[in-house]
Amino acid sequence: MNKIISIILILIIPAIGYAEVPQISPLNKNDRAPFSGVLYNPTAVAELVAQREALIKQHQLFIEQFEKQMQANCDLQVDNLSAEVDICNDKYNHMLGVKNGQIEQLQNLALEKPKSHSEWWFLGGILTGALITVGVVYATK
Image 1 (cartoon, rainbow, N blue to C red):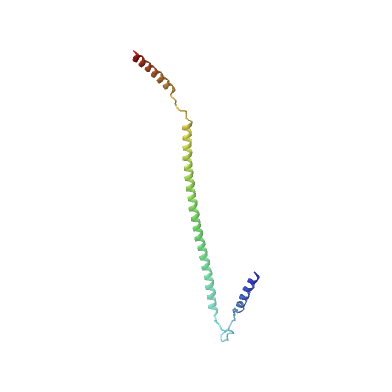
Image 2 (cartoon, one colour):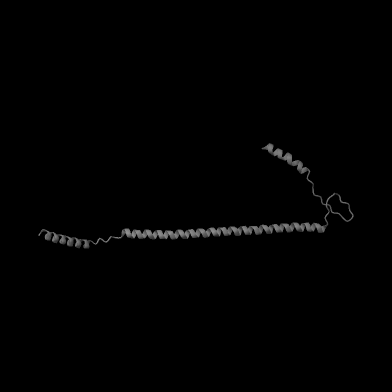
């Protein structure tokens, strides 16, 4: 690990040594410049500073707008998912109510005492027996 750090530092340090240091030197009219380069008057410097500040402000506004747009998009997705969950819950509750109603109806049918009609069976048996007896008596005569 130390070898890797040493190699990286050996490669970076010479590049740092060749970097040019920015120089600012105020000049008056008819003065010689102490170095070669571009000379800006105060108006140009003010314009550059104003452009820089305007770009920073524009970038901040863009970021704010983008954040608001993303927040609105997230809110929309959350609201849509909440609506879907509500619909699923309503559907589940409705199906649960139908199921419970069917279970109750089937329990009532199962627990209901069947009507045996035992008195009709008794009377029918007596009548059938009497008719068979009468039929046998006439058949044997």
